[in-house]
Length: 112
Image 1 (tube, rainbow, N blue to C red):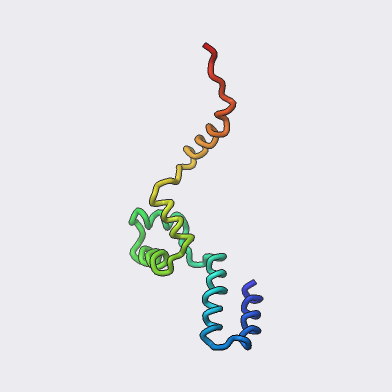
Image 2: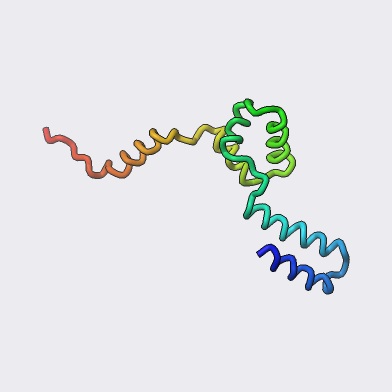
């Protein structure tokens, strides 16, 4: 996919009016789409969790700061927002809640 996109951009380079137009197309479309699809530099969710707790080693903290604040990775910022609001249930509680919600219609009230 990447090679096809690059070869198409090279073929289209002859129709580009300026070097700036081609650079804009490459950086704006191709790199963004590849980066968003593959997320090669995104930290793991556990790393983001440690980042929110402030317990990352300094070099990792700097990297995550750069990644979410400077690069403004939408995927990681969404994960951070979820982690910071505390909406994530623990595995056992989430399973119990889902089980209860799915079976609540089968429960019968005892007759008086």
